[in-house]
Image 1: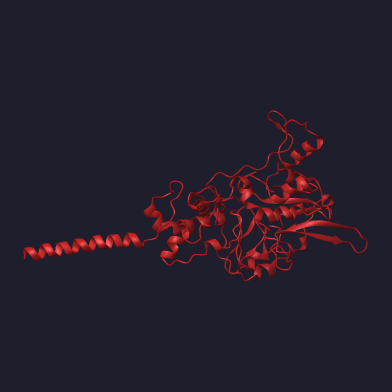
Image 2 (image 1 turned 180 degrees about the horizontal axis):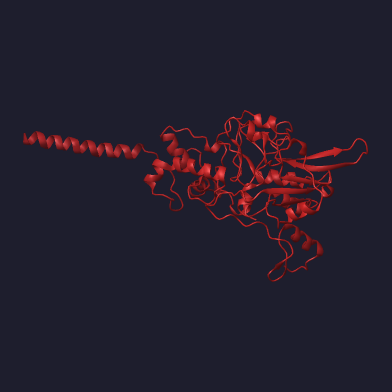
Amino acid sequence: MGVRAVLLALVLGLMTMVSGAWAGETGPSFPKAQGNCVEDPATMRRHHFDFLKHQRDDTMRQGIRGAKHSLKECVSCHAQVKDGHAQPINAAGQFCASCHEYAAVSIDCFSCHATTPQQQAEAKR
Amino acid sequence: MSHDTTRRDLLKSAAIGAVAIAPGLTLIAPPAQARAPGQPASAANRWGLLIDTRKCGSVCTACVDACKTEMGLPALDRPATDAQYIRKVDVKDPKTGHQHSLPVMCQHCAKPPCVDVCPTGASMKRADGIVLVDRHICIGCRYCMMACPYKARSFAHEDQSGQKDHNPRGKGCVESCTLCVHRIDAGGQPACVEACSKDGGAAMLFGDLNDPKSEISQRISKEATSRIRADLGVEPAIRYQGI
């Protein structure tokens, strides 16, 4: 009995170690953002689409500006700069695309929305 | 600034914004303030334009060019399908031969036919009277384009790239002049008006039609103005002089 229990514990322990390593290797890898996010990562992972969809309607239809869940802000914080040029956020391996590809999510945000950050100041005059 | 201010510079800056002639005293009322973050557009405002066609040159395209740049509209040189939010229309009285030119854009009607016919609610009027297309729910049926008496709307026929972040636009959606809503919300004025005062004949005036103290309200209360196809009763926010 004692030997069996020890063996079982060993096998289970090994399995968790292996599966832990497994999950770490195959999860999506994406570039790190430049600043702190408006929510904690776990909340963003689960709810970012709800936040964005809610705010887009408020902004578009009622004209409420300056709220914190903005796609523009996602892009400006998460876009990588390579050789002085911002990379499109929906390009392969970039922040948005890496997770969406992993989760087999097909979004159409970027068929309309700008994929690189732009000068915010030029709109304000 | 080392050079002396010329009369032209002064006039230019007067056309653009406020000119302080003494502390606490301004010659022209400053443009509307930016709305506080978190505040929705209010029905207390009714944004509109007054366009003096007598100052509008027939070859000048400053407003059209500024619009294309501001809104990120590509010039593909395909006039039948290229997106245009504002266009120059040349009109001629066949009896007298008198002709002039005027810019025509979305007239931001108080009773917009495009909103009436939209099957999804994508074509909408904001509380402050700006007529917009919510591209998130536009299905591209183009009923609004047929309903618009001003031919103000365009359709994006192709995949787009290089959009401006304040004007998301893509294939399969109808689009039109937003009265530069992103600038108005930030307390500015439309790009066409700015370009007209800088590079054109300063024919365009932007302001709040609901504010009796605004320059535009003052002028339309004192001078004769007209609206294109006023007989349709859609009550546009764009007024013209000299047509």
